[in-house]
Length: 60
Image 1 (cartoon, rainbow, N blue to C red):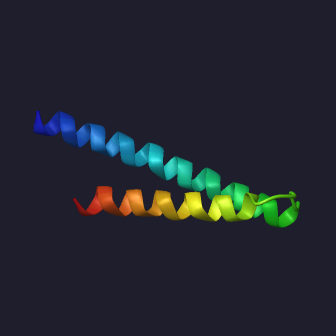
Image 2: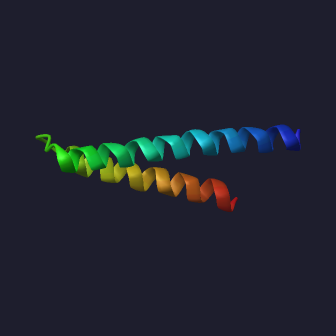
């Protein structure tokens, strides 16, 4: 059971990391192509949330 839980946590961490990379790419694209609206703020908030999730997952 412990090994299966560890494997699931690793997979979850991979998915979360991929999401973070996608958000960072989107932030970069927004800098190159301004999009009207609060997109940049939203991306920054999502990036911060994902960073917190990764941190919590790694430290527990």
